Length: 209
Image (cartoon, rainbow, N blue to C red; front, side, top):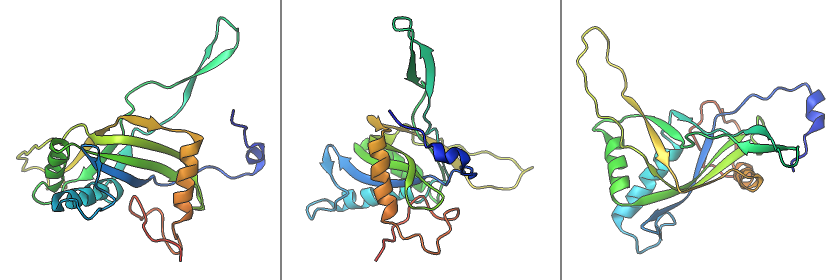
């Protein structure tokens, strides 16, 4: 059972959530690893793995529907209390701004047709960028839709970028203290010197010397 940090109650500091960060740890095609770039993978697998990593780590303008919490219920048998996880649609949703030539929709269709899946860690770093506050680790992720290809004619409004939100399906989700510890190790390896976390992409690859 987790023990509250009682010192934090009188520390006088408020928690300001930092932008969510993402790290792709594995990509498979029909149960075969392709992210590690073995010498015998095809050129398509190499390019698709790079594109999927970029889709998760670089291009999202919003990542939503990552939440945690419990409902407190009374146990009639023991007259005690139990915690039940909040229920609902737990699929992460990623919003992207489409690129010229419908590049993302083409990627999402190929991703689904060729049975690629990704293991992805989403984590929130603390305000010092030294450790993770909370983290989720998903396995077997793939797009739930390929986005809506809609065009309209409206001469009363100016053109604007085409955005759409993609629900991401998954096989398993782990939101344990162990996952948060793994995410903290990732944060510790990042060199955040002179970086503005509010302007950074969803991940940072620069490592400490």
